Image 1 (cartoon, helix red, strand yellow):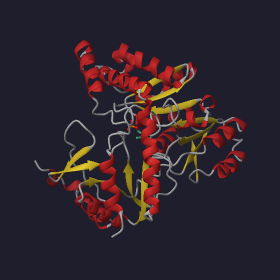
Image 2 (cartoon, rainbow, N blue to C red; image 1 turned 120 degrees about the horizontal axis):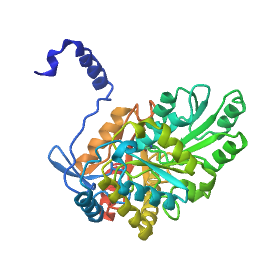
Image 3 (cartoon, protein in one colour; image 1 turned 45 degrees about the vertical axis):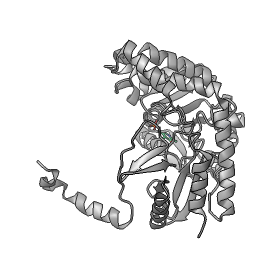
Image 4 (cartoon, protein in one colour; image 1 turned 45 degrees about the horizontal axis):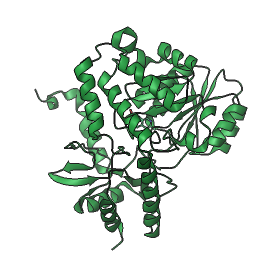
Length: 389
Ligand SMILES: *Cc1c(COP(=O)(O)O)cnc(C)c1O
């Protein structure tokens, strides 16, 4: 029976019409093939500048092989939540490996970065507590704040002085938690981690840093922006993801043993959701080997990203404050972003338009994600497509 026969959902038609009119209706298309570098859209093969596969590991045969071997040995499904019987030796090994990688006592694996953030926030604060959250934090951090039922105070993006004055007035709360992305997913800029660390210590606040887009990319060993800035050891709650530069799936929290034990006992997405297949952990282990053994991947990526930003600026584009492989071209209105994206599509390039609610109103952009898999030729084609006629 077609869904349209359920009149209780008729309100959806009006909502869709409104989205359509504002240029905000979203549609999906299917990716084809093993590499993230090419996508098929309406039958056309396009070079993909819209993935988070920063080190080009998602399609790497070494990850696939690790997953296949693990599957042969341990089967596919985990069959239970981790606390019942879903926690496999592969998960345990990966957690130990992540803790070594991050230089922390322990680490905890979640099925996604989204679950890591919502679960951790809601486990650390509750009613009577307060969360200080950057205005451009990822949706999962925002939702975690809401789920926690703590008060949430949003400070303007990167504005640590404003955060300082909010902290000054926060003594009445039981617990304080400052939370931020380290590398922002839409702007490609970094949080002022040195200042945040200092404030957290001065005001006795917990500090939680989400390195989702920086894990594997930033820092000498690929641990993220905190490593790059030399403040890692002063950040008690570090979140990273296996699903972006590491080409696998899942999120993690790294920190002290007591923090991790608390999350095992209190993080609801961890407790009440089936453990990810062990094969996912095996693939992530293979990815961590590559991150250790092939540092030139991240070094080349950041060098080439810097060159691309310079070129785009010299062509007159506004790339905002990007310092990374994420390069937005800020154009303002959704219609302009969509038109520019269409123009590039005709040249065989996919660069996604980013619209509200992913970015604030008036800041629609094209978001270029550069990865190790892009060739110089592909980048040249992109630059030509963006040269004003
Ligand atoms: C993508 C992202 C997440 C979610 O990670 P998944 O593993 O994709 O669920 C969390 N935080 C930030 C900042 C992200 O960009």
